[in-house]
Image 1 (spheres, rainbow, N blue to C red):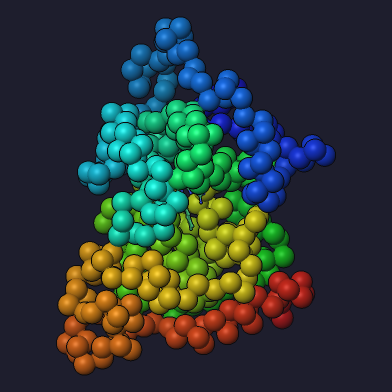
Image 2: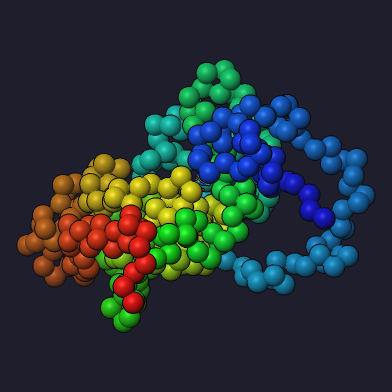
Length: 353
Ligand SMILES: Cc1cc2nc3c(=O)[nH]c(=O)nc-3n(C[C@H](O)[C@H](O)[C@H](O)COP(=O)(O)OP(=O)(O)OC[C@H]3O[C@@H](n4cnc5c(N)ncnc54)[C@H](O)[C@@H]3O)c2cc1C
């Protein structure tokens, strides 16, 4: 038996009028909101049942974290520890929730809640978070409305996994399995450069170094680096998915898989294959002053706000002697290769043997 505690609605709780699962987010979200009643947001009366809980972690056969493969790490202090740490973060976010929709896309700004690791391990209650956001949304708070949408995305991806378990290992839309990703030593070297944050694209490198050193990555940057891996480097999204699974403290199979398949366009309600992020324009738009880049790529700290997004192109003389790689790929050429690579999906033909 299993007991729902991780999401607001699970499995078959939100279905279409025909009784099937939703494959597109917005109608799912509307149905989710229609189904919501105070009951689903209220705290469970746990006090009545505490006697039934296991006394200590190892009592009655409940394995400890080490037994199921977790190792202790030095947690990034701002992510907080345990339910007390989750509570501190949530209290801090409550003061900022009304600005979430404006601040959430800028990695140098304290915009999101940073609660994902607590949602993963259950050290905050999803009902409590959704209750607060929903109440504020009804009072007209736009930030709360957008944040609640993100919590609904989380439920959405969980039910996608329930209804379409094949997406755990292959493309949600099977025709995307026909894509031929790059392979061999050169592809592996590019993958290593991506993992280690030395692609020569500062926003990508700063993001990958944030992941490596803190176990967290800002959502906008997850989208940028996932697009870069699949559509600039031409590498299989599963390589990136696996790296994220190893590195992210908030790793969640459904959200991670959903995010990767969104970026590679093979997912449910994914971005179209021809939408290819330009890493330099993303950098200029979301880290205009280069504050985030400077934090994780200190070797670029002296560059101007204009040069920092594409240092070798915009400040070649200043870059002489700086230990920072040249771009591993030409974005315009990679874009063309990707459009060609995805033709196999468009035509739904099988690739050449
Ligand atoms: C390629 C890729 C991989 C990702 N991998 C994960 C993962 O392994 N674990 C994970 O929790 N999220 C993942 N996400 C979603 C999102 O990036 C993180 O949930 C978010 O950055 C966590 O930071 P936060 O708690 O400050 O988010 P906030 O912006 O404060 O959002 C609040 C909560 O809403 C949920 N949420 C937000 N965005 C999404 C989303 N797009 N999909 C599903 N749930 C969402 C999360 O539980 C998050 O904690 C991934 C996104 C992408 C593009």
